[in-house]
Image (cartoon, rainbow, N blue to C red; front, top):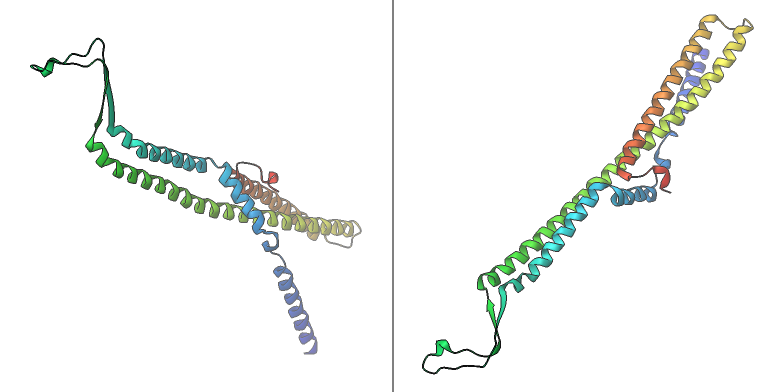
Amino acid sequence: MVIKKFFLFVLLVNLFFLKFADAQVSIVPDLSDSYINKLIDTAKKNYPRVKSYQNRINVANTSLSKAKLGLLNALTVSYIYQPGQTKIDPTNPATSYFQGFQAGIFLNVGTILSQPYQTKQAKEELQIAHNEQDEYFITLTTEVKKRYYIYVQRLAELKLQTKTEQDIESSLTDIKYKFEKGEETYDNYVKAQVQVTERQTSKIEAEAALFSAKADLEELLGTQIENIK
């Protein structure tokens, strides 16, 4: 009975330390808010769709400037040049004319009345362009964070796989040595070899997952993540 309690105590202690060790495995210490902000700023500068939204804003600004100058379209200036001497016929004024330049200014009332509405519409279109850009910045910020978190996760997984592979390969070396000395069975030696192969396969899969996550993140950044310090 005492022996059973002793083994139960040992089992509980081992479970405690295993749980404690697992708790130490975390990607949180590898995350940096300042670095994430650098990634977001880089994406905002380089990602083509961001440039498209800025182009829309530029077009809307140009349209607003044209609308503000639209009042000038209501003004028409004309002139005529009449050479020779001035002639005035009191009995038939229609045949009279003046020498030199004659100018006139005409106002288009319809254009004047519609100009404020055109300016207001242009302002609204500019505001819509800004709103669409702001909305996309929120989407882009979230997507950069998500892809960066996945990248860090894949990097941590690869580190774990590499450490596990190294431990199992070390264990295989010990089992092989004991097997050659006749201190270990062939069955255990084969099982150790299979475990090493499985760990190597898992490591390769972890490497591929990391490369894929890196490519997804760099798609938004427009540059390699190594270039962002």
